[in-house]
Length: 79
Image: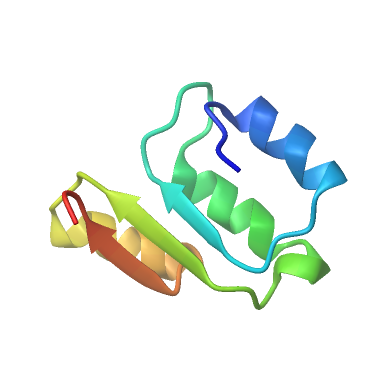
C-alpha cells in the first residue's frame, strides 16, 4: 500500500496491520516522515516492526535523524 499524505497514512493504519514500513522523509502535508516514524514507534503494535527510510536526502544528519527517530535502516535514492 502507498500513502501520499499523513492523513491517508493514519486512515490506512487504522484499518490495516503492517509487518514493515518503507517511509520517505519528505511527504505532502504538515508532518514529515521523521514525525510519522516517531508516531509509529509510540503505537505498541508498531513498536518493533522494521521501518526503512527511503530518501533523496543525502546528508549524514538526515540519516542520523531518521535512525534516532526509530528507523531501522536508511537508504538513499535512487536505489
